[in-house]
Length: 341
Image 1 (cartoon, rainbow, N blue to C red):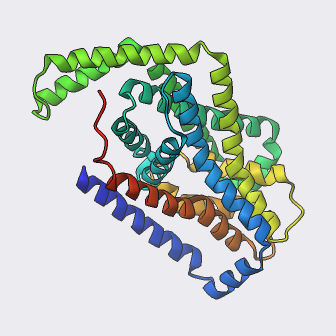
Image 2 (tube, rainbow, N blue to C red):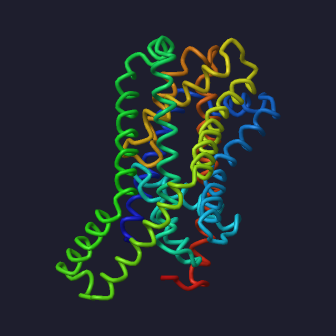
């Protein structure tokens, strides 16, 4: 596991280096810095606040769902889980490392595995579902704009939409099929015993059964409380819109006009949908490439590269640095609390 993390981090750094080289090879860094200095500071501050809200919103959702099922979680702890998840998602392909690390730290803080799993899967499902619904809405009601701005990237958009929709179906199937989950976990533990990773244990099978029962009870609670589901989906929609409006703040901060807020936000949503499921840490490289292609008619007058650097710098690299600090804190303090079965 340790070596996998090192390899993943090294791959992330390599992708970042290549991305920066491609973006800046024909640019004067001094001119870019001067251009950032001329931007309206109020809009830059709004963009930073919006980015921090985007990650914090996941922590708020985790806190809300845990409280709804009777777990007296602290909001500060839940914010810690969200930033930690963002960091590990950012440095692993297809954001696969975020939730396992969140589950680990939630368990270390005394939250039950079954309840924590349901909460994290509910947040992930709502996150993807809202993204898919937005993507379908854009394709249906803004087809003309989609064709104009995407051009040859249109197939990539629909691939991303399909992959996100498929993941929503898979997540819902797993969440709503408790017996199937128990069979899967038992089969997995038998395989691990066979290859001598785990030792045979009857208590482990009993533990799996108990965990799945708790899991099903939590799923049933959330499923039968419409107000919880409504808040989950509604707040996730606000969270998703926050990172899209960030690009609008950058647009206005550069003193540009001509494109309306919907166009800028819709195009940023398109970029997210297209690259979200691609197996690249932080979707590096392809995000920048697609941004440059999609926003070519919006950020005009030589402002395209600057807008991409500022937008990507705030909504990913800045957040990654903040999240890395939180993840480092979690790692240093991980031995202070016992695991809760």
